[in-house]
Length: 137
Image (tube, rainbow, N blue to C red):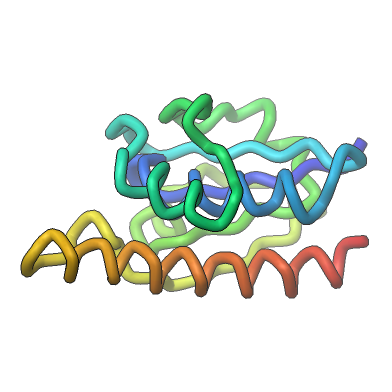
């Protein structure tokens, strides 16, 4: 079964959202996971904005990169420069994709302004996962 890995620094927002969309868009023929070079816990705002579009990621957890899973991936997507730069070496057969997306957890301003950033990043991730799914299926 082919597998994809979404990697970010803390596996709390961007990679979690990407995992949720990929599970929905790639379906049961793909193994989908996300992880981080560190674990920062699942961000409640990420859970909230994903629920707004009908994707439940509340059961997902923040995980460290699993070297064995990584080595057997067909595609590895990094969602921040830190993950791209600190990602362990993968076999040449692994297709690497980099999506330099803003970290919504770093958003400032009012609660509404911060939530707007989460929604903006969520929508960017959904578009990118949809395009990726078209190339993979």
